Every structure is written in structure tokens, then in C-alpha cells.
Image (tube, rainbow, N blue to C red; front, side, top):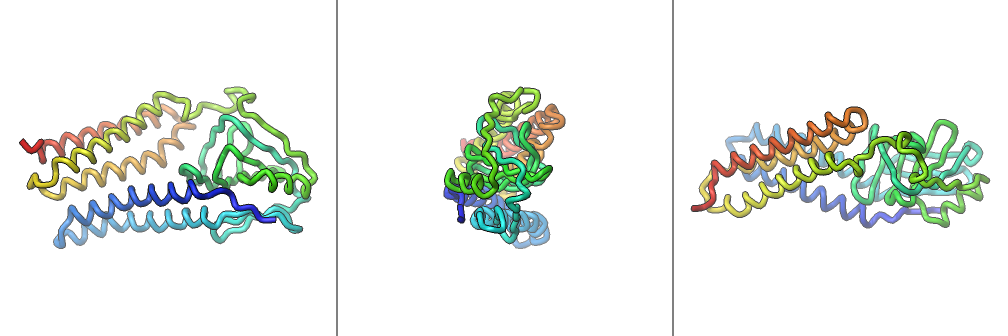
Length: 275
């Protein structure tokens, strides 16, 4: 039996995010720098293309993701990797619902997609390969765990082949001190995150309105490129820092806001308002 999790949302969001982020950075660098800035362009675009290559591999991981239940066991396919869990080695099957607190050790996620090694607080630490965390099923084999998001029919097949009862676990019934502090319930973190987005959007709108025809040096567009690069850096690191030193995560986003405001002020001082 083969199960392919619903991927449309994750695939489309992956394309949109990559198109916006990498498209803006690559276009911005090429637009801002002339032929005489070849070395500087390579220094900026080299890491961007490398990150794009990694991103494409991650996106392909979603495209190739599937679960198989056969005589050998439960097989999780992701990109070129195959994880096989023999039925006799399965010690517990848990269907998780409710509030999830995920700590990424080496993983990637965007709306409709998650893959990598995570600590699901109050549940287990292991590898997750899925699309809809509302359908999270954790399969344990001793200290090793795998999280997938299969259909109800596939969950039934796992229960029958492993001869293990699927235990429901509502995370709303788990104590707060076990789940830990959650990002999506922290108004300070969410507020600083939102401020970073608003500053970048405002910078983009300002440049779109006042840069054309202003006669300002094209290099000013690099401020937007840098703003997006800093935002991407904070996205990766702030969420990890939060679970260890949440104040450090606040500071990271606060520094991002200050830098973005500075970029906006610099842009306004160079371009003006067309009056």
C-alpha cells in the first residue's frame, strides 16, 4: 500500500516563497551592480545560487515524499533516502493532535511541508516527513521515532500490520511545563516578527513608488537585498534560539527592525519623495 500525503499547498508555497525571495535577491543584485562590479556580484550571487540549489533539493524532497506499507515494513521515501521500519520493531503508534511545539535540530519547514529532525515536545524526538501536522502520526521503535502525515486508511494499515493500537494524544491535555514555551503563543516574538515584515514591505513599496525616475544610484536597491538576506538569517536562527534563550530571539528580531528602519531612512535620504 502506498500513501502520498497531500502536497499541493506545500509545493505551491515553496515555489511562491522561492520566487519572491531568490527572485528579488538575484534581480536586485544584477540590477544594482554594473559590469565593472563583477567580483562583488559573484560574492553576492554565489551564496544565493548555492542556497537556491539546496532549496530546490528540499522542494524535490516534498515532491518525492511517500509512505509505503509492505511485507518489509513501513518505508518512508524522501528524495533519494529510504527509511525502513520493520513491523516487529514498532513499539508504539501515536496519533497526535492539538498544540504542537516543534524544536528543529536539522530541519526545514514552510506552510504545507516539514522535513528533518525535530523534538516534538511532550511526544518524541525524531525525524518528521509530512505536510499537514494536524494529521501527525508518530511511529516509535524504541528510542527512535518517525513522524508522518498519512491518510486514515494508511494509518489503519499500519495498525493492522504492526499489531499495535493507535493511541490518540491530544496535546491540550499535556501540561504546559512539558510542552514548553511556544513561539506561536508568544505575543512579543510574533510582534517583533511582524514588525520586521512590515518594515521590509514598506521599504519595497517605497522603492517601487519613488525610485523609478528619481535618478538615484541603483546601488540603493542593495539595501532591499540585504534586508531580505538578514530576514532569512533571522528566520532560521531566531526560532532555534527561542527554545534555549528566548530573550536572544527577541533581540535578534529587534536588531532586524532597527536595521530595516535604518535602510528605510538611508533610502529616503538618497531618493527623497519626488518633490
